[in-house]
Structure formats: structure tokens, C-alpha cells
Image (cartoon, each protein chain N blue to C red):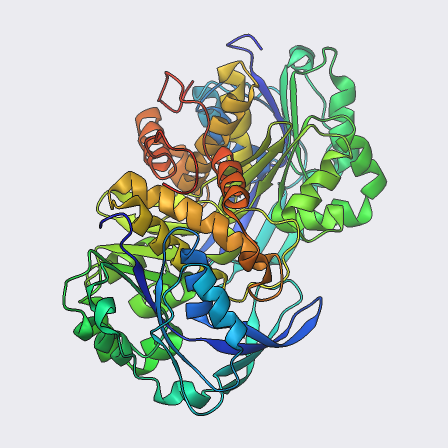
Length: 314
Length: 314
């Protein structure tokens, strides 16, 4: 990947209605592509493919452009923007969907502008696996990094198509419960091994407030969570994580084991900001010094001075 | 601490009746002191203070002695050994107590043999806080390291006594739910800060399959869990962790930040063995090469080559 090579991000843009333990918020701009693109734009200039309705605020797209994103792949369709409504439990550890209105997202067919077809890093956020395949089909140059996310709905209902996606990506990013569902195996370690046999050479398991795990040919890496003082709204934290991962790797222009491991730690730090306020508010206000400070803090929570003695017994 | 200075471990010895997802086991030798002492004996020669009944197998104590433990503080009382019965959920993430028979443990009054009174590392496993205080009262030399564990029962019913314990120890080891209960605060980070104001200079929060966290004056350290392929029986894993922590620190003869951080990682590795079989079976079979191999593997899951660039943006 050449240094300025942008990442292509494909996913949903949405309005979210959120019932949080501390507040209720309506018409919050969200969606996987929104969080992932904002996050990736801390590192690179992402190209975004998504669809919004006539009701979607023009200012959001203008803000995207000020951040250096290419928004020409965001289609404005005739109709209303995708809307999701959910309610979180008291301590944010579970949520229920109250309503889903697909609206213009029902007919979303990702169309890549000509120059997008040569993106060398691609993030296929959680959308129908057949749409993920159609994005891959439109690429004219094989990307060096193809990351995909998915969800229980597709694992249960579109398994065959999802397996075709798994055969064409190199990195699957998925949460722990969905990993277990996909593999039919409770042990995360055994489940990861099973999924790696389905195609991807790397798997990143997101565990929310418990951090994330990378499984690759070098072994396992355990990225710590950033311990938050005030968790407000976890919506989009996983997408923020995936966006930072792809953005970081794009800018690092490398995919070796050490770079991947550091990318997980950085993604964990960036995702923690999303949880600190409603919607994208905190993430959108994040600057590079703020990010660097938190990454350094998180790194200090896992590193300790190397000692001469490496046996368990000191 | 001089290198051969033994750790004093005070706690319960018991029979456990276990209903596990994969099997049912009766009369399993357990108890916090059993797990902690076996674990600590990988590093040092622990002195054990506990009570057992006439029904407790002599061979277990003989085995303790072969491991170099001092068992002269284990009282054999007239009556039956403490018995706990519990049932675990399908994926071992929760358990219910089916029965508790205190038996000889009901009248347990820890009595330290004369030479135990100069132990410089002490582990007060989960027992009534007034008994924890009585152990501290019997010490004639102030220990360099005093670690205590506790549980929800004492937090809710013996809070004043427990607070006196907190004022006299330096390290509290506690699981996350009990930490929240003790602090009245859901955020682990805020809860830890609140508990550190109650007395101890360090707090270790155990999170089971999600690892552990150390809070001390240097900040926060996040110790990874060892990802298990086969989790069989988590009984005693937390006590194994605490025993390894104290044993490691005793043998390391140091309490600096780096040593403490490595101690957490080692304790996490040792505790993982306990979960791999019923009761103490796997832990009891563990030798130093086996432990060292797992510590090295766990360390490889958190460390990555230091890069010149320390900012988040590569």
C-alpha cells in the first residue's frame, strides 16, 4: 500500500433512536459506515460507499469532506434514511432492537465510482453478504487488505453466501457471540481455528468492554480494553474499532505481525472514545494528540520493562 | 523478603460436590487454601493455616508436605470437613450454590504456630474478616506483603469489620462483581479508585475468562486471560491466581511495578491450568517447565516488538 492510498469503506448510514440508561436520543446520525469512516479518517482519507435518504443532513457529508473523506460514493436516494431504534440495559452490556426501518437501505446496491475500484484496503462493514461480494466484484485490482464484519442475522440466514465472502477476504472482524455462532463452538480459541479454516488468514474477535483478540499465523494477540470511567453509549464502538484498524494499517503501509498487533491496540483506544458520549459526538471531536495520549496510556497498561529472566519463576 | 522466606496462606480446606456441564464429581478436595497453597508451592514453600475434619484424606496433607509446604498450621478437628456443593451453567459463566455445610469450619479460629508469626508475605483467602484480623494480630513482624480476598457475603453483612481489614492490608484481590458491590460503583476504574481510598495501596480485580487488572500507584495494568481450548471446572481458579501471585512475589523478593505486573501475568497462566480439569487435578500435575511454557505463550499474546514510533499514527 502506498502511503496516501485510501481505504474503501462500505456500509450503512443511519439515524439511530437510542434509549440509553442515562438519556434518550432521537435522530442520532449513525450506521456502521459513519463510525468506521470517521474513525479511519484519523489515519487516512477513506472513500465511502453508502446510501442516505433525502432527510439526511447535508452538513454531515460536508463534515466528512472537511475531514478529507471522498464522499462521491455516498448515494442520496429518494426516500428516508435507514433507521434503527434500540434500548440498552442498565449497564450497557446488552441491548434490544425496538425497531428497524430499512427505507432506502432496502434497495442499496453498492456502486463504486471508477477510481474506488483500485482501493487497496477495503472494509466491508456489516451488510448483506451478497452486497459484500458485489463490492469485491467491482474491484479491478486485488486489494492488499480486505476486512469484513458480519452479524448473527446473516450467519443464520445467508450462510452459503457468507461462506463465499469468507473465501474472498483476508481478515474477519466479528464479535465473540457471532464468532461462536459462526463456528458452532463455544471456546473462542477453537471457534477461531474453525473460522480460519473457512478462508480468512486473520480473525479479530471483538469482546466489547473486555478487549479484542487477533488470531493469525503468528498466534494469538490479546488487545486490552481501555477501562472507561464513564460509559455512555456503545453504539458504533465495534465499527469505530474496525475503521481504526483499517485506517491504521492503510497508513502504516504494512501488514506484518507487529504492525497488526499495534493496530489492534490503537483501534481499541479509538473505539473507547465512541463509548464516552452519545452517537459520534466524542469520536467526531477527537484529534490526533487526544488519540495519541490514550494509545500511550493503553500501551502503558500492557507493557512492562523486559526483564532478563524469562522463565515464570523469577 | 529474603529469598526462601515462606508465604503464609490462611483459608478454607473443603470437599466440593460439583455439577459441571461435562460431569458430576463428589468429594473433590478443594477450598481456597488448598488451591492457593498448591499454586504458591510452585514458587515457594507456603505455610498453611486451615482446619479439616477427621474425614479429610491424610494423603492430601502428605502430598502438601512432599511439595515443601509446612502443614503444621492445618488443624484436624473432631467433626466433618467443610463441604460446598454447586452447579455451573452450561458455559461455566455462572454457578449456584446448592448446599454449604460449614462443619468444623464453623468454629475455625486460625492459630499461627510460633514460627509462622514472622512470615513476611501473607495471603488471607476468603474467610470471615474478623478471622483475617485475628491472623494479622498474631503476627509479630509486619509482613512486607499482605494480600486479602473477600466475597459478597462479607461485603454485605460484615462491612465494618471488612473495612478494618482493608485498613491493614496492602493488596486486595477481588472479583469484578464484588469490587462493584464493595465500591457501590459500576465502572471498574471508578470502583478501584474508591476501594484504594479504603486502605490498600494495590487492588487486583479478577475477571475470570477476561483476565485481571492491577490498580496501583503506577497506574493500571491489564493482564490477559489465557484462552483455553477446554474449560472444564473453574472452581478454585481465583484462589489459584491469588496463590501464584503471592508465591511469585515471595520468590521474586521484590514489589516494584514491573515485578507486580509480571506476577499478574504468571498468576493468570497458572490459574488457567486449574480450569482445565476437575478440582485440583491439573494444577497438582503442573511442573515448572509446563508452567514456564504457558507463561511464555501468554506473554507472546501481549508483547510485540517495540517500534521506534510511539505515536498512534504510524
